[in-house]
Amino acid sequence: MFIDEARIRVKAGCGGNGCVSFRREKYVPKGGPDGGDGGDGGNVILKASPSVRTLLGLRHQALFRAENGAPGSGGKKAGKRGDDLIINVPVGTVIKDAESGQVLADLKTAGDLFVAARGGRGGRGNARFATPTNQAPRRAEKGGPAQERYLHLELKLIADVGLIGLPNAGKSTLISKVSAAKPRIADYPFTTLHPNLGMVMTDDYHSFCMADIPGLIQGAHQGVGLGDRFLRHIERSRLLVHLIDVSRSTGPADPIEAFRTVFDEMRLYNQALTQKKQIVVANKIDDLDEKKLQALERFCQDEGYPLVKISAATGENIAALIRLIQRLLAELETETTDLR
Image 1 (tube, one colour):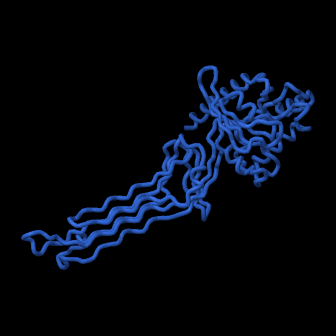
Image 2 (cartoon, rainbow, N blue to C red; image 1 turned 90 degrees about the vertical axis):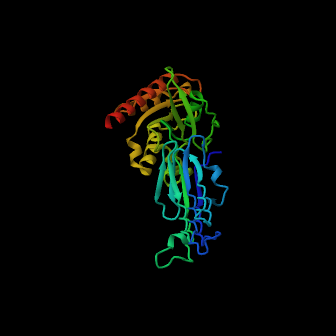
Image 3 (tube, helix red, strand yellow; image 1 turned 120 degrees about the vertical axis):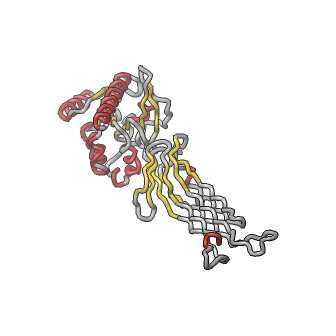
């Protein structure tokens, strides 16, 4: 199961109380104050871990709580600091305040940390309050309160390539052919109900990550068909591969309209998505409708989109598509390096 949202409650540890104590030793009838400080409370920390793939494990726990600090003791002994609680989340998790919706952190890289709730400070023992005029203070501080908050977590997949298109365009079939991913495949819309990730190996032993984004329909940017939840995953992709069914049996009547439906939903969700480099792929050429293909070829030539004709089912021309993807990713990497 793929879970890309979770709401959790986190609470740090409270600080330990300071201690009121006085030296009681033989031959020291009037020992001074020796109460130790309380330990600080532990923090709740979210950490991006490549070994975690979904947010599913966070949805079944009501509260994530760090350890309280221990109280101080006599002999000026400080209390033990509370242990931090580290919550591992997938790389690509966006952390928001559940009440305000404010983005608090975006854990894009493995090892990224965010302190979600800070522990209370340990209270000072009475030894801290001794002065020349008050050499036997009988007061100590209580430990500080722990920070507590509700968080909303969203996972945005981090993939080099995002496969987009209308439902049943053949995205799941393609990713199953070029990677070890095993998505559910069938000849009806909305077979893919969650994004699938696959690593694609190239002929020169390089690799790139590909995400199969569930089919987008009109109104996706408003949540129709869970589209807004799927569109967020495209934001992380460096290159988009737009599959369009040009077959006689299952393809849309107008391939240009199919392209524009998905393109408009991306634009309405986030204008920046339309600026990403995009390849148009005419899929299912094993059952080709020549008029649809010709119309798509003219459109891509006019708009400047690279066009590749494949059959994901038979594997025809997939190798050429992979080579083009690899070349464009290398160009994007060079552009990024030059900008630095």
